[in-house]
Image 1 (cartoon, rainbow over the protein chains, first blue to last red):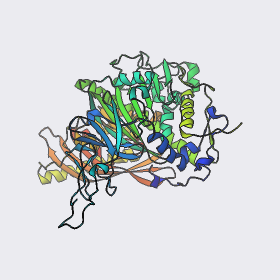
Image 2: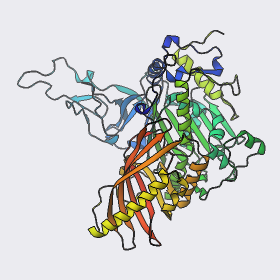
Image 3: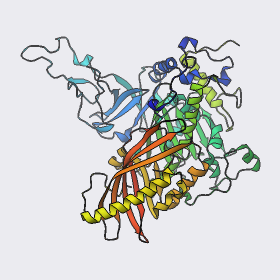
Image 4: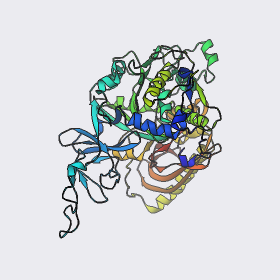
Length: 434
Length: 173
């Protein structure tokens, strides 16, 4: 629900803490303080230290801008940018703010242009963001105009560093961000390359939704394999994931900031759930079956032991491979209590028509109306309301306590622990003395 | 994936016949909305033919010819499965939905008795302790078949203008 539709919308001062009051509880590995989700000061610092810091932010797929002049609106953190392909084939990313008076000049979500012209005073920029022309630069009848020392090259659009990996475009505000292959780290890169082996992609369409929750919760939810078989009874009933399936929660071994939630579907379409496990799962429904179960079929198209890999790539990208339904999700943080999710669903250019339809049918699992997607969105909304409005202030993170990094049990919170260990360091938060 | 034209379709039907069909379609949609707004989601597939296509998608997808659906059902069985999943297994906050339809426009009746029509809709959502909010606005692009004398949907493409959806879409539209 949008901010304007929130009935009790005020955040208590204790939850909207100033940075100097943000000290992590002493048992830091096993606790998350509510203020990480609710403080405006923390949010502001995240934009500076994370999204505008030494990170690679997903901005687009090359398949969306194949031709010179193709462009797309996008975001780095909450900052609007334009992703553009120039005449020389290069991909360029610059802020969507006219260098003159600040207008967000690019208004179409996608298109093709020879140049970008700000509609306000018609300053024009080339496809790389360089200032080309200013109307009446020398004035009219020798009156007015720009001063003699005005240099176009000093007034271009703010440009970001750009890198690509197999058709995926990333941007960074920092000159120090390491090469993308190094940034992703070996294990994460391997699963990334499974989805993006370098063959041409075909965009199937977009979803966009606002989630009334803090952006970090989306990462946490996909680093939390514990919830998968409990919240999503659909997964369990139809055998897509059962506690006990071959699965892993992989964490990058360098920083602990990226992750891959991976599982392998059993050969049977419907799961066998032991009586003992059933008792632990209140949401389990026995005896439900589908009239049309085509959408649960898994076409083995990848050389991977996993049928599902959900990758959380710090700070703003989710790579979804849920069997044969593929997508990237771009997180756009929108204040501490809200985030926008931009989904781009795709297949491969060489898909048969039947394979494309299979991906579309299977797409019912994910997205804002997906059988799994909508439950996640609801749960995260509940958490944001709880942490923002309640008088208590701490989350408990004790499953597989003490452990950080990759885990081979679903009943673990080790990956969330790793993410926050990294986060504390990047944000410079100190820990309370025990 | 979209067999119906999204852009303004010219009317190709006799006005008197269009008025008669419009009344029939308005009656049909009143029942369709009453079922959904009344919380009877498992009866929703009854409004479709066995082989029907149902898709909910953003206008940006429809205009670019992109096939993805927020909801994408090929056939009544897929709709049935969705309806059962929603009513019996899915977790979401309780809510009431209210459809308001208008501008029913019948543009064509084929020699096989299929009827092509559009109707605009507003979908309101009310959560517990919440205001009623405009959740989705758009147009139904419909193709009706006549089954034993009654209208059934062979295709309903729900194309919404709402660029950013508030959190999620639980029930069919």
